[in-house]
Length: 525
Ligand SMILES: [Zn+2]
Image (cartoon, rainbow, N blue to C red; front, top):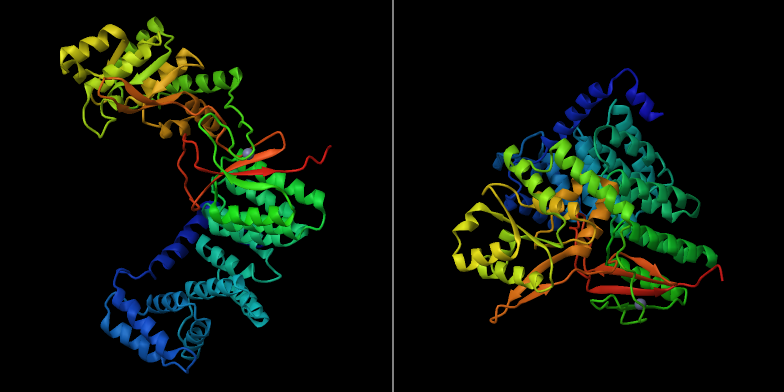
């Protein structure tokens, strides 16, 4: 209904213009020099002295406006209310808004947003009284009547308030409005999804939105979401349903490559203990064996079809779309392609410059010679991608490399990754890459479907140098061959966890240090 009202008579472009206007309005409220702590100190001192008393906000407002040029009639109230909110003193915040109303000063929408967020804090701690629900719905109505269009930030603030009330499903419409102008934030999803998991009848809605945030908006679900799902399992009376939801949750975590935080792990352990299910924190050895249950984790597996699809996509992008070799001149690319056609397949492709600088960042031609020798001793056909300036290395090193492997030297300004990937992918599914560079940027070129396959393939084939010993031999970090995502072997789940939640986790090919080993009953037996 609301979305229809907003869209009526206005194109998306027109709507965006209006939305942008609202957003700019919000930005103008931000104090230009937020690092000026003296401003905050004035307000926090005031809050300490005046909490629970009839406060003289007029004096505070006047003092700030008189002394501080960065505060004006436009932004002073938002600044005061955001600092008062950070003291978590609802009484003062409400009184300040009352003061504005009594003195015919405009209560701006972002000011109300601060109040709604504070209501949400109180709600989370179980301290929000029922009369505040009415306030929240009144603010919601007031803002809806005031504007034809809502910006994403206002929608988010309203959602903070609405989820504290029984009318929380009005948030769904605000979520749709948000999507018209922006990617919904992690906060928005987390608030609505957690609420959906509080009500047994709305759990499916929670799952739908959870998939949406991960698949469409690439957001990493935060701890609050997982904890709300675990609490819903704790509150479920039917044991079979509890096990089904646990399996569903763990599968979701594994499929989306999610590493849960310690906080979620603790709630998961609590849930499992309450169901008398075996679980233990554990470590996994380099060959994939769980120290707790002695099972071996699943091996990384890419089917031939998956490999072919990934390879063809990459090669097409490299040659047809030309968005892979961006820093390469056409002549160099032509020479490279001819060279690969003539000499491939290779057993191993070595990132020459990366190896040369991989020990303490200092140039070491010896390191490159040692890596070449390492693979030569294994009778491998090696391709080394290097730079033209390597020809200036001492002949004892450059001569050795030239004699013992194939070598393609790029212009000094070219980027090496595309050459390495092209040569390795062209060579076939079992070719190794020797480099410390994890080539993250290239996985995005392959699109979502192939990103995970690319990650698995690299995890299985990426070698790197740990150190060169005094006798010239090298210590090599070998690729980890087992699945490092949460997954099930027989009836036992293993899932990695980390200390803290990360909103933007980096791709990792390392064996995680901490794991949880969970035995779930097989309901089909
Ligand atoms: Zn185990």
